[in-house]
Length: 517
Image 1: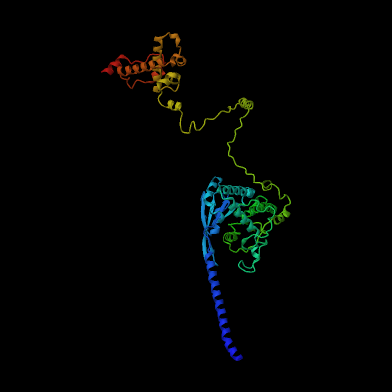
Image 2: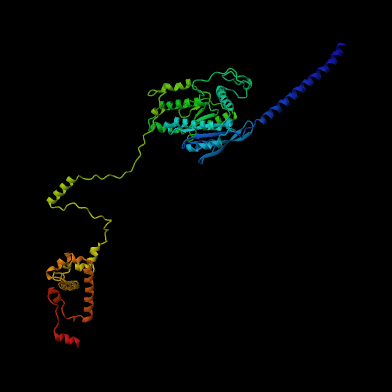
């Protein structure tokens, strides 16, 4: 009986084991299918975006090009749009991260309505960009752009309860921060819990309160502060005598700003490729929850990396120990003062006029020494070289009637040098005409000499000059019609040597008769 029982029981036990094994196999396949389905439903979203704010020449375009892997960045104006290819090697998925870059001019702030809308608000990360080339204005630039962003959020008219939900989410992420470098794996069951005791399913439990100065200006957005061009620190040390305490002073003020807005901090250099790859990994970590296992870096002054949630006022106070010539609470511009720029203004050199009495005394001394007094030279623009004046050119050619009438002594035939020239004969002829004209018109005592004619007021009247010209032309016409010129054997020297008052020489009658024959 016992043997039969054993035989009868053994098949029953085998059937039960088989059913249990089948159930385990079904559960395994079910778990695999559910895992695949879960992974397939968690694809990378395509609605995420990054908004970049900063002044002009702060390196925004170069930084985005570095994150894109582009060597030749192209600058635009207004509101630029770009995208970054994001790949998930584990899930074999990829997507595009939209990037909006706002121009540095404050007048373009109204374009934010295209980049940050109520629908895109929970999917947007804001990045403030400042450059180390202008360290004296870093804090001012950050404050200005934070104010611009805050004003734009107020204009979005997001419901207060929804905005409060966004702010609570930022607070929760700050409190749940864990040093990723200490974790074994994000998906591991040994993953360390948060430093704050949170409840399950995202329900808040007993959370620690925020530290001093943390999230006092919570905008409800994930923010990252990026300081570019940190390679310029060496130039500041050489040219502006910046010491380590100056850079620590700058860093502690920027970290205070990051605490107020719950932002992360990155010191980058696209020229030396510092922290650019880490910035890309951090952005994908904050936006797509990719793993980021790099701890905070605060040792190297030009490669600072502080994730959001790591910092505190206690850690910032470590920088105070290195400040000897300044205090942490000193006004920023008093310590990091802008350089004094001297603009080179090209002004015309002023000519100092010499005192009148000293000038006259010098002239008197020169006159007493017999030297010619200092006179103003003729400007070369007024009389260029090679060009003769009007008076000189007039004297070189044949004289006009006005010149002969004005200065008859210049062409006086009685003076030496005037003999042998036809101009003296003409001058003598016109003077004789003037004598006849004036003798008939007025008293002979009114004109004593030809010189008096040139200086008398009547000689300069337009009516007398016109009459003289008409009489002279009539007399010349009469002479040319009357007789031919004397024979060539008659010497003209007798006419030139004769006085102006003697009558002209006439040939004998027999010569005239012979010429008529």
